[in-house]
Image 1 (cartoon, rainbow, N blue to C red):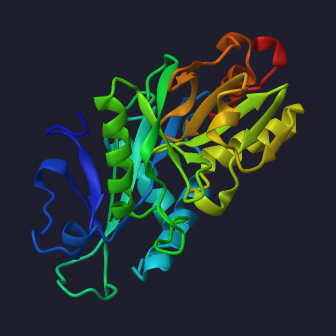
Image 2: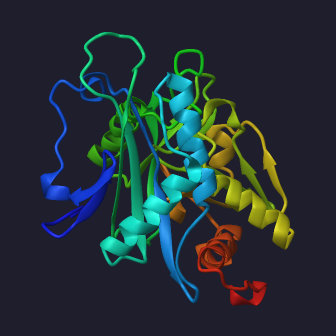
Length: 295
């Protein structure tokens, strides 16, 4: 699904076939989850393939490395150039890119002295599909920001996401909603939350979430087209009295909710603010003009 015998990726200062790239069984990243990554999309536009917000993504990759003491000897522009070359070598335009910074063999619990960079790409549709999703309030909380650098995109953090997502799947739902340590809504396993009520959007504040680049883009779109959006603590009860809700993320893009637990959202998705944001987001990534009458 992610590669075949023709796939070429960037690994350790060279372009190699994915089937020939090798890592070690004693790597610190494998044993302790001590690695950082990004999820980035490129789109086929009228101006050729364009990576969406590459500077923001690679600056966050560098920030994540700094948070956990992983050295990264690449500039943002170097990583952008490598990413475009990976697209060319794999004949991709609409694609998902995965940069990963990982560490060599080291069984100590000390920061790494060196690291490796891998960048690969593959064709991947919207992560959560295109249909409205049924969401379950998870029994797993978002990690405590006093215990982890939760604003960094660290590989080991996603064990928490796997647990929450699998719990939801095992109970017949499409996705999970994680709460913070205070019992307020935080985010999904890999996406940020927006809730609509009385013609306005609300989203959890950044203190207990990974404030995503797509989340920032949604807020940017709201300002551009005059939709009110507010950051505030949101309880589960408030969501269950809302008109609609949606998740957003690079992999998921914009995906509407059908329900949370037993609560079905009363507003039709086609009439929701989320639908407007979904259309505006698609226009933005494709570098097209957006008009409200599109929705």
